[in-house]
Length: 291
Image (cartoon, rainbow, N blue to C red; front, side, top):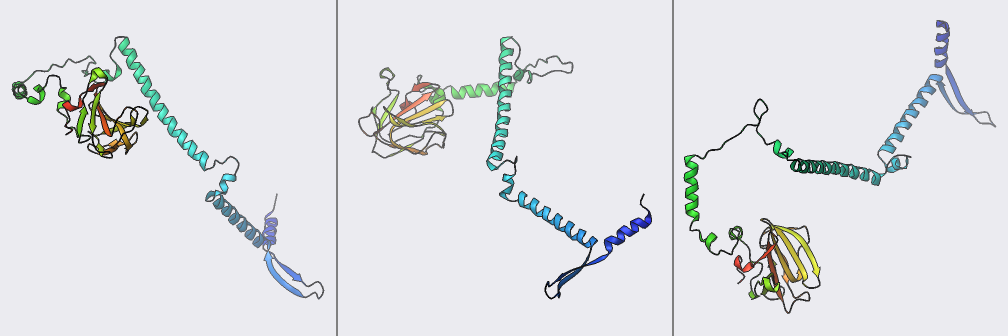
């Protein structure tokens, strides 16, 4: 075991001063000298080592050198990892939706109530279903009779038995002002109207909607289709050029194309316009004024 005297001698040796000198080899003249101790040497060397380690860490952390470290991902790999994580989250969400959909179908096939409907059932304290009965009040009956009396002679509804009542309540912008030279004729497979106008005239959207097709076909040339609310689709054919692309959100009355003469099934500059409701073509002249 080390005695206190030996420990004292050890610390004393660390504090002992030494002289480091440099002499001229030929003249033995002292050129440079420095006084130091072992403790000073350890302190200086340790401090330099710590500073060097910190500089290396900062250099690696805040520069591109870290990408050269084996096992460290580069920028592309990190972006790919983030993208994959987002895709996995989306995939999990879609799988959960699919499982709920299949469970609902399974419940319907087996004669049970689907989970989405079970959540809306009002249950009592005992857990049994609570039957809720609704009774019409006198105020409700009076209001119903008033509305029915007002709608009884509503010309917008009874104007034409062949018109669709839902479409009569919608205001449509005219896609183009001009002369209708060919009317709607389902027997001739002409599911729209041909409107003649000057070449280059602006074609407008009849309602707010989203472009679901914008491209070129051999027969109809530059064609654009817009999905609207209320299960409506409008089609614009034979344009000279299109101002919108698929996926664009369109406002009512917004410019979407220019009148042209493109496609094989055309004999001059005009717009072939079609209006489809719930998958069935309807006569646009019943709901839109073109002149």
